[in-house]
Length: 293
Image 1 (cartoon, helix red, strand yellow):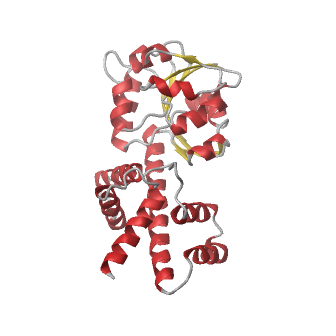
Image 2 (cartoon, one colour):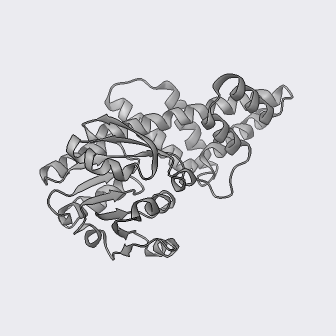
């Protein structure tokens, strides 16, 4: 199959090798230097997004945000116009529901199917082909892209026939991750105040209550933030903002999300925008607690 892959950030670089095996893949990234880190992955490198997609049967994109995706695909000289008739665009990015709806409408008008296919997991999970994918779109398109998506996923959920529903699912899931981080943060602060090692607190509540690999993973990330974050505070803030925007559009009250978003905004104001999402959330809470004491 002829595949185009747009976006070579940390997640894109981790997903790409799984798609390149046995298929003809052409890649493009806004920053050409990222292609130098591909190693022995056999792909062709295109000078532009339009060149990358022109012969592809399926186009995967994993770009930073709404603006990046719409800038690359929409417009008279965008990638959507350059795609061959009937080619499918699977958007892996975490984007707003509103942006996904705009993209779906534009693709429908061009008779080029659009599939929402965001992923849950960090780059090291992608490298192990253990992401969870939320996918949505028409049945014919899903049947064509699903075998490709399964290459880098431990499982997937078909959310809806409406592509934007998959992106809503993604930001809704990320809200739950933030809620988990926030609850662990308060639990750790309580444990510290009571003279309990937060690592011991994490072990007991997870083994005794949740038995969740995610609580274990994120708890450890909070207590021992990685030198190179898989997800940053700035990305966490973006996801929280997208959740709030979609909830307001749907007239859904989200008081917890408002609190989480304000905390992430404060973390960015404190210069933690490039810190690990979980670690930065906890570090700011500890700082504020110690200032009060």
